[in-house]
Image (cartoon, rainbow, N blue to C red; front, side):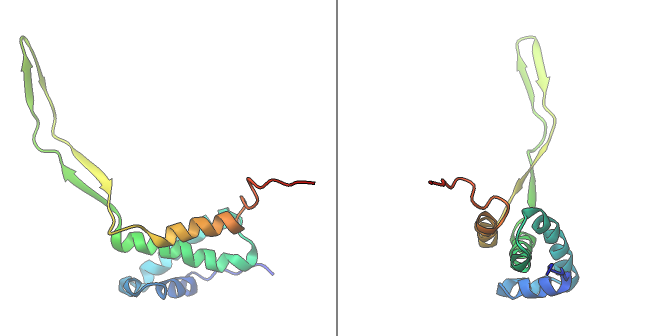
Length: 129
């Protein structure tokens, strides 16, 4: 029997995986669940493992929603540099980088889960006759 994905149900179940996830609005959690489902479909999980995979990947996205994201900072004003007759004016800029309050345990668990049950199951195993 094929698994029937229900975004709001998966989102609700994923919110139970961490106390902090309760802060995420239901509509945002459902949207994250729908995004997670796109990844889960491509992982090639068996039907009986797809809901758990969807909960794990949704939890990973919720972790990023709460603690991650992209932060940016300014690099300051431009600088004028001279060397003899040559001069160069640098322009001001900014840099963006990922930030988080720690490692995402749900992503690590997702990777292990897909390695065990996904399309890549058995890769690297040696069969001896």
